[in-house]
Length: 341
Ligand code: A3P
Image (cartoon, rainbow, N blue to C red):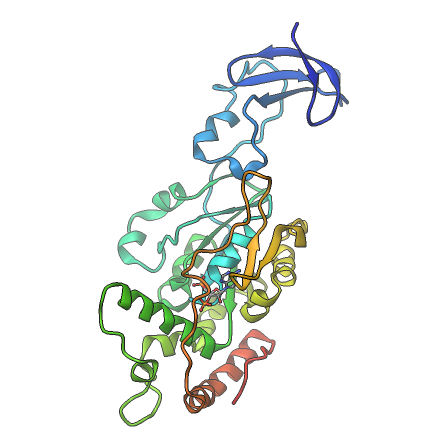
């Protein structure tokens, strides 16, 4: 019978291999909990579960794994509808939030923005299609998160989401509405410049010829958080809606992530060790899990340089947003440190 000379996990020597094939090894647990307590491990080493994708699904199926007669416990991975959604707001740190949450071993993220609930054509594809886009997860143990920032502001979304799952957990990240607007403009300007299109100035975009704020401008409207938030709290109880302070999150992500772990009913597994402040990027990045994968920062579309805006225009914007911010604080039941002047 072949043996493992020294197990790299438990340091036990000469472990007897009871069964092996091209993919798996089976041996007796070193501290058996019962007379027949065996472990089946793949030959290929995965540093952690995050390295698995849908191509590994057969590993969880006894029919394609080693002999199904062995008394092993397998955790079944399959596709489930999300039990948490990051609804927005756009340019408030939604990508960083999703990626940072994904460092939790029990969280499975959907990488792409699926636009399932806000895009009528996508919605018409049905929940079966939506489920297929999900990563494999363990039902009842994992939290599957999808994020699409357009959900927050699109009228039809709260009802559609409610119809799918009335007890779903919802995360909204917000930041100072004026900074959000400038970030939105910086993105628009950068996209236009890439296509060699004319880039109007910030003032041209957000002010009417009269000098008043153009309240119909999309970028201005998205920062009116109270208007959209009111729709969400009409349908979902507040205990299902968690609001993240995006300004705090950039400055120090961990306390905001710890609150989310509590909100999701997950053990606190995300720690300072998961992140490192990158002085070149000026933001926190995800620390590599081993020597193979170094630090992982968000791409250069996140953390763009913002244009300088004249202080009088900033003042005008702050005055414009003030009543909406106060209303948002009231609805959210907490205040944010957004400058008033
Ligand atoms: P700026 O690019 O204006 O700085 P979203 O992912 O929702 O589009 O939000 C983008 C914003 O996320 C960025 O806006 C940036 O300020 C913020 N952000 C928060 N944490 C970040 C991080 N660790 N790395 C990069 N951007 C981060």
